[in-house]
Image (cartoon, rainbow, N blue to C red; front, side, top):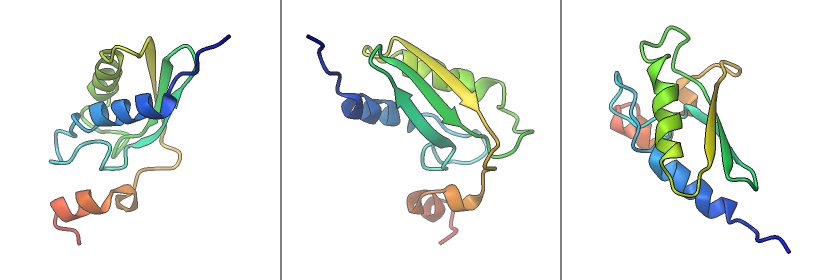
Length: 107
């Protein structure tokens, strides 16, 4: 008999953690900026986060994925976390939430 994990609940916790991580150049968290493309959680509580950066030459290209990985791994339910960076599709301002656009005076 397998116990079903609540991936939706865990997903929400992961999103809450992601919302504590900010792009150093923009006063908006990486989730609202639209840098997080997908969050996968499997039955072993391994997570994979597909994310992008605002530009390939982003000054935090080395440190931001590590910060995401460490903060997500700090959640009790998460066993492991892998962060994959992709530039396909490339990030654009259209990926930002209304909240982020408002914060940056773009609305």
